[in-house]
Structures are given as C-alpha cells and as structure tokens.
Image (cartoon, rainbow, N blue to C red; front, side, top):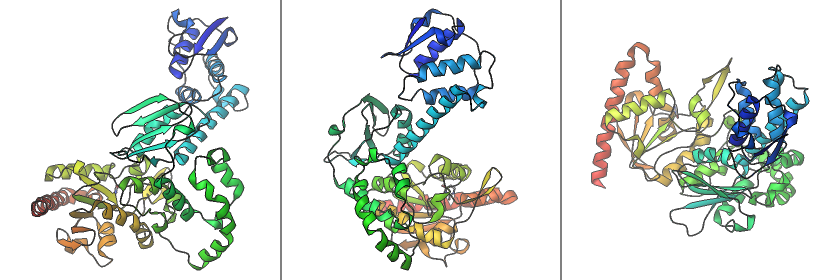
Length: 459
Ligand code: URA
C-alpha cells in the first residue's frame, strides 16, 4: 500500500503522476488529507508521459474543490481507468465513478453560482478609503477559485470576503488569501445592509412567489447572512396586495432597482440584480460603466456587445478596440474616461451558434436610463460624449440627429456639455468607406480632446 498525503489539486496531480508512472493501481493507494501540498511519499517515482483527456483535467480541478476527501481516491481511480484502456469512461454516465464525478462537479458549480449571487458586501464603517466586507459560508472550498471573479467584477473596490475556511482580500490591485474566520468577526450591520434590504423589497415580485423555488435559490442556510431574507415573511404576507397594485401599474423601468446613492461602487453592486426590463433574462450579465469615479469625461455607447456580455466590461470587443485606437490617436486617455452604455444588458437574436446584436427599443432605453442618470449624477462630468444615436437620443431626446448635430457642444443637465459623434461599430460596418469614416471619427475626438482642455482651464 502506498500512502499519499494530499491537500489540494497541485498536490494530487503531482502524486497521481508519480503513481501512474509506477503503475500503482488505485486499490493500492491510501489517500489521506494533509496540510501540505505538492510533496508526497510517492514523490520519488519518475514522471509519466501518459496523456490524459483535457476535459478530465478541468473536471479534476473543479472536483478538487469539493469538501469530501473521497474526491482524491475517486479522481485517481478515474484517471487510472482513463489511462488503462477506458478512454471513453467520462462518456459513460451510468458508470459509478463517472456519476460520482459528475455529481461532485455539479455541486461545485452550483456552490459557485450561489456564492456569486449571495455574497453581500457591507461597507466597513469609518474605513478610508472605502472598504467593503462580506461573510459567506460556501459548501465547498471554492473561495480561492472564485476570488478572481469577484476581483474582476468589483475591481475598483477594496473588499474582503470572509468564510469559515479561508478569506480573500482584494486591494484593487492584488488578491491575497488568509485563514477563515467565524461569522462573529464580520463587521456589524450598517447602512449598506439597509440598502440591500430596501433593494430586495423593491425587486421582490409577488406575482412570481414560489416559496419552494425561493428556498432552492436562496437556501435557508444562507438566510442568516442575507439581510433581505429577514424581509421574506413580511413580504409574503403583503404579496397579494402588491400583486393587485402591480396589475394596475405595470411599468418597465430600472428605477426601483437603482439605489439612492452617489457612490459608483454601490450602483455597481446593485446593478446585477436589475429586473427593470426583460433584457437581463437572456444576457450573461449586466455590463456596468467603468472608469474613474471623478472622470471629467463620460463616454456613452449603445449597449454591450457579445464579447462585453461574456466578459462583463464595456467596450472591449471589436468596436471597443477601435474606439481605444481612435482615442489614443486623438490624445484622449481612455484610463481617465468613464465608459458606459445607454443600455446595460446585451440584446441579441440567436442565429445558430451566433448571437447577433439587436437594437434596443425605446422602451428598453428609457427603462435603463435611471442607471445612466445615476452614473452621471455621481460623476458630474464636464463633458458627456455620446457614441451613436441610441446614446444621443437617450440623453437629448428622440429628435436628436447625429448626422446633423455631430461635433456640436450642447449645454446639458448631467454635465457641463454634451457632444455626439458616430458609434465606432458604424465604422466597422462602413466597408469601403471605413477609412474615411475613421478619419472623421478621429477628427471628432480631437475636437473633444481640445474642448476638454478648454473646459478644464475654465474650471
Ligand atoms: N458597443 C457599445 O455600444 N458598447 C459596448 O460596450 C460595446 C459595443
């Protein structure tokens, strides 16, 4: 019998390679949970060159996050079988090992989904600069694997996620991990918690109450840490009355979901739960504005595209790259500009495997406007730059025509001035006129750069 001490995926992989190299059958290995990773008793064997299906490695990485230590022998058993004549094992759903592997993988995926949905940051009172903390109890050991997702989503905030197993800390630049902490060490409730509660009350849709489904989505175990859960029984009691009220005042608007705050971070935290129109149902995620919260210039596009929807950041796809290039050539520093969209969810139609951009309707643009207005009210820019007709009409009214009014500076309620130009995707569509359109676009941006300098001087 070979004894192997293992505590993480890297340690298991090293051990598994050595065990395979010495052709050790699974029933000859005793896997024991250990504190250290990477080094094992089986470490002296030479490394194997056996190839393993890629999909197994990905699954193994995920399953390694399961809390149950039976995962280690299971993973080795599956690996051994895959490399000993059963290459299609993962396709045989009814096989006991495959089934168990799939169940474990699903449990992790679900736990990650829950953590993304249920982590609630609270502002740490008195912390300067602003700092947020959340306490969460995942079922599995997923904190380190998921922390990069939170760093990406809440990149501009300093936050800590405390869990009983492990803690993650993000300082807007680097992720660090520490030991777990009990619930009692999370900071006390504060105004952000109230904000969540109000917010949850506002999104609670009595017409859709399904208590069983609610418990499945928000397991009772999480209720202790979720301020909004305390509202559930009173909301359920009022549900009938609210259904009636809603039936008489059915409206499409993000307004009830927009917290009354001037903090961009708080807006950003609330936005993923917007149900103000139906676009959230098909989009991968909300794509909120990004950039400095004290930017002098806010650029507004139409809506996120396919790539933006997948990655969660505005203007990072083909149109975004073209915009960055033109900004660079015009002397505008994208890092100093807050970039957002009139509509925060990707609207598309499916054609086979492709998702084709679909223009948002006037109702959808109006529904989303409270988010844009909240961003503008928070930033108070000197200049708002509208890219294309959707953004311009969202802020200047339906009569506004980019073709006749591009490059003109108008006084505006949400900034000192507003100017419109074409959308960079119009250049991508312009085919043989693309070069000419691009040159005109750069010219507009140069005008904008000059105007920013003037407004700067005057302020
Ligand atoms: N087009 C937009 O209007 N916004 C994006 O973020 C990307 C493409």
